[in-house]
Amino acid sequence: MAMDKITAFSRIPFFSQLPRPLIDKLLAVSGNQRIGKGSILFREGEHAHFVYALVEGSVSLVTGPGCEETIADFINAGDIVLIPPALLGLPYMVTGTAVTDLLVIMIPADEFRNMAITELAFSFATNLMLANHWRLLLRHLTQTKTRDADTRLVQFLIDSAGATAGAARFSLPGSKKDLAKHLGIAPGTLSRSLKRLAGL
Image 1 (cartoon, one colour):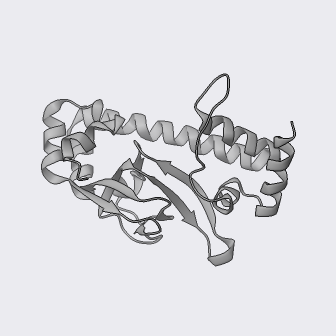
Image 2: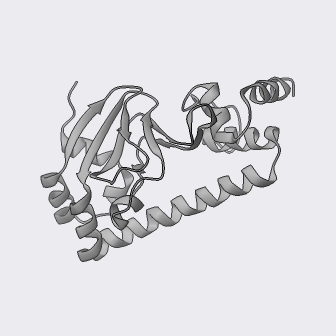
């Protein structure tokens, strides 16, 4: 079923911080698009033509050659995919792959950049999002460098559960192979970690 742009925009927290005239301006230049699982949104080395806001689905950010590729992160519904290339006019450093079927809002990169330059409220909201992304990136790097496989997995599961107490249910953002790539461990190591945790 088709979703109108106003409803799609309402599902992205970033836009809820903006005054209505800025939302109307974004609505005028943006479009919604459905993208199938496994599709490539952008490739490493390409320049950003759009900023993608994820209304539905999940995207993996992949880097590295072939069998050595690593998943730097998963971007989930409600978030915006990689603002820096659009702001800086530089190539993507990763490839964006649809882990599931997606519904995205596509904002032309030039329009996004111009609004970040000329509109204070838009610039402030963008700064808050980038600051949050930086904290998450630094946390992931710290865990990858200093913690063993079991500890990395436990922290990922806690972060994904979204609950502070009691039982929680959630779906992995990709396959177990994808999760292993994201955590920087071998698939076999991940399987053994899951079995150890299941026995606790």
